[in-house]
Length: 419
Ligand code: F6P
Image 1: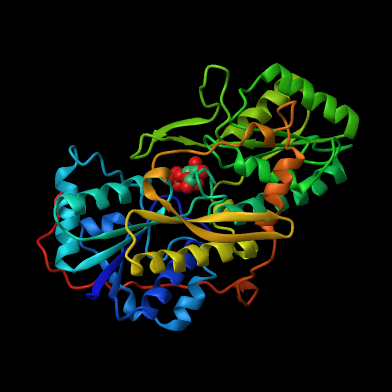
Image 2: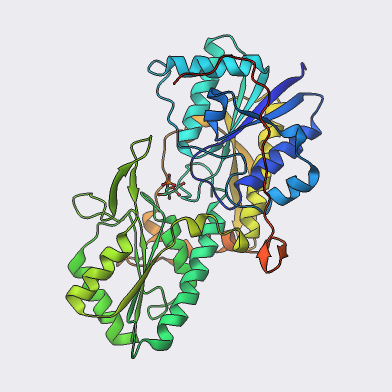
């Protein structure tokens, strides 16, 4: 086999464990030096390739690789940058291939969600069409847990753990003072189209009177009168009510309740602000004192309380991606395959990128309680293993010790790229 170089890029929203995947890719490439020469990482994802801002990971020491496994965010940077169709964005794709050619990139690892799987798939087709041999391997990650085929997505387990424990802790706070103070607590979590994260908050308690008392899912149209009646009934029965709401909750006409008015490069609406909106409706219509919280980036960066299972998944997909590349695979992605719920057993298997690209996995109807405001026993069986195990980072002076990488860019070989 001819030795060629590799390129790794992170894409889309980062997670608490995406750097662990990066560390695994780097480690595995080093184990295959006979096949993979240098491994470059893109600064800010695919933009790094277009702008020829490449970080030579060969300079990263072992100690830093270990630290990366404990560090949230994306040490190389990530981006939301849409490459259009092969026809519309021809110049961009040609630039990518030109950069890959200049660095003799024979392996492209793209660590992201369904949009990134689509991009990696397109690049694999382009390579073939342009007669440039390139193995494109996707690597799954997304806190939203909405990739099809894979049983779960690296990044999700840790967010799931964070929201479940934050809900459990906040509920104890609210319960303590409900008689004279706050009656309703509303916790907004991520999930624009799929309610996986909101569902995970349901692990905080079980039974009709345990918090969270009500969960709002994007999969169910919001009915304000019904919601308020349930909040009121819950306060009258329990003295307080804890609500978890997915940011992507919509009204019956399909409009997001929390649209902030801005859109990203993919045309996705920026969400956030559902919790204060719901809280004001509770106050206006029911008169209860409320508090609300928006977990926002706190949830996807909460590495201090990451799930060990999630970390194991993140490492495993990184290693598997390199093994696939070395085995001569192209246009594939490692996925998590569940073998059993209890005791939880899983393994990594292989799926074609084309099966994952651009598709979205919603919460199955069988995971949502019949009344639409909670999770079922089936959902608990699915979710419970994903939040198991603690993977604490090392601490110093009371704070986690995280990796800080000052990436040194490789010397440019091509003229600057003009978008
Ligand atoms: O990566 C997915 C996600 O975390 C969504 O759940 C959330 O709506 C979105 O990213 C936020 O994106 P951004 O950071 O680009 O505003």
